[in-house]
Length: 326
Image 1 (tube, rainbow, N blue to C red):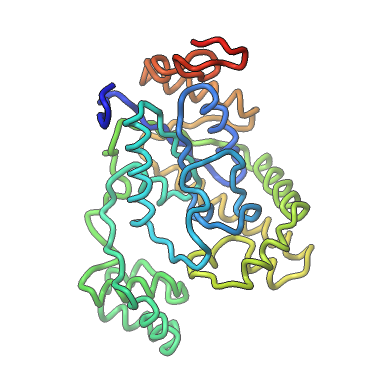
Image 2 (cartoon, helix red, strand yellow; image 1 turned 90 degrees about the horizontal axis):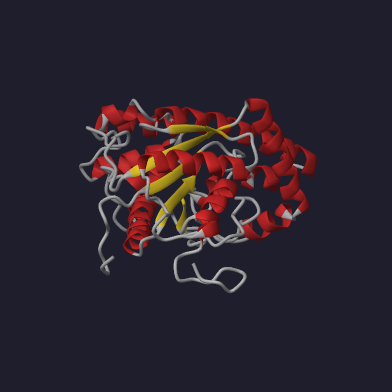
């Protein structure tokens, strides 16, 4: 393939699912079998300093731990980075494998979203101060005056979104943009999105076990270091920061489990709204789920990985563990 060229039939694969469904493990098996670049679509794994709390993968993954904890994240900034990474992989003949549980970030990586513009420098603190001085109800009432359509979609107590809606209204934009491209079927490249489905009782057991393991790995010390510094509004939303900071050990662990289960239910709703999603039963071993994923992917893209890889995902011309080339 010529440099800087993307063949029309090169696909992007994506894996979505609730927390604890095994997305990273399945992605790593897939990447062992075909030449693939794993790209994170997890809004909290973007931050450095919280690898245990945000369950960051041990395997090198693009767009993981790229921002400091004082960085104010935005979907628009993430989308620009994700598009660049995906296009670079395709140019090199490698399959981008976009993996994450943040629905909006997954969509942002795959499509050209019609996103509101980023706020001008200094605007965010000004509207945060306005919200705090007016209080939730009066700040929301102001939003009703400035942008009633956006006000209908935002609760008064949702400080972050009220502030964002106010700054957009002041700039002549709206948080409630229409027509929305969020659920468009049009993707930037041929794309197949898989949704990992796990029975609720299995998922609950996995979340409980993972939370217990986080505490055994020293998550409390990790959080202590993080909160000693400056946290952006978006970084402060990481599940577990507030619980570990404010509650005793056992209460914090139980609270994190409850909140994570609630978030998993929210992710399930997102999964039902993703166009043309291919569901996969994911209570099985990651290798078995990866087998099903690749089989389904090759039904649509028969040459997936065939031209680039040999046994176990080894690229042609590369040596395997015995020193033989394929």
